[in-house]
Image 1 (cartoon, rainbow, N blue to C red):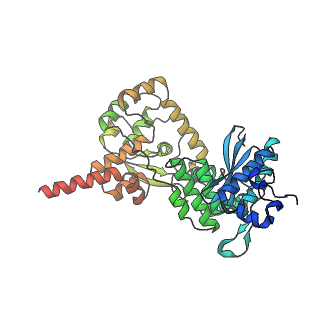
Image 2: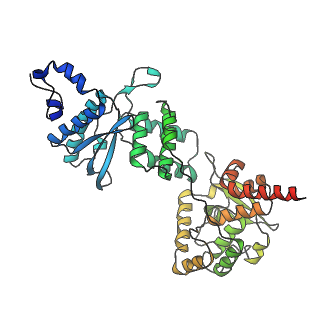
Image 3: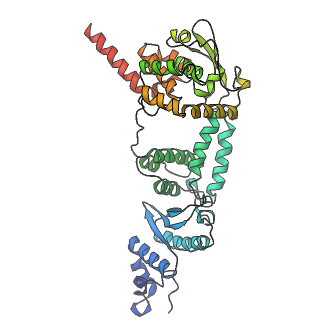
Length: 411
């Protein structure tokens, strides 16, 4: 009796045959441990010249090997299969490895050729044959059905799409596939792991494919490093020196009014220490006008901000004047201006490391907290919700609240 299983080349498997008893009985014995079966499968793959191995990642299986990915980079990597780590799944993984190797030897990224794995649909209503590509397409349509295509929304979608592109487009979408991809493509307790899990959970909820608590656990304990901000004294020393340079007015205005970088060209100063600006980053909403305030007010006169001086032709004083493409180009030019040798020397002399044009806005927020400006007014002046303000500046708000409480206790 000839062995016809995919593991017939493996010596471990060859120990079980008709000479030792019914094959079905010994096959059951061989499958008693999943590790043994995976070892046998990998031995078989090696014997057949397939330079891939099957690996178990928690409750699912993946392939590991070296090939050239879609970006043209040859490296050792994992390919999540969306297959459950079961004896039947190992059989499916063996077939997937054979097909993937054919693609690799032909110079094709195997992520694009594997046949979708059929999984049970939500609630057990039969198999769900939707591939990742199909679900992502519906997900994108749903994303844009409820929001305007603002610059902020475009940037948000780009971040989401970057994570979705890690998934094998032709595999069936399962919670095991999402978990395996996040685990294989990102390192534990990193920002990239956190972002991947957040996006994959959002996709899983949209598709209704299963329990997402596994993704919650996988995201780990990452916390972003707290931003070190320069003091007002450091800012004043820097801005006094750069005021007469090309980007001097822009930097002074951003520091004084706390606007986002792309909102600076929309500033129209009033005579009472306030200015009108366009709020650009609003989730699912179009740009709109708001009133912001100078803090402190004497900075307007100190740097002669009434004399508007914006490099280039960037000027959008009405929401309909704003172009997201033009705004991105202008902000990019500003950032490039900060990288000149002269400006880099000034930044290193006066400010902390990691300074960029957004830092000026954060400094305004902290200044408003120290000045005792109500959170609701500060959030309104900055053009975001109170919840966003409290989350973004929690560290400084908490410190101020504690100091005020101690002062009251001392009375």
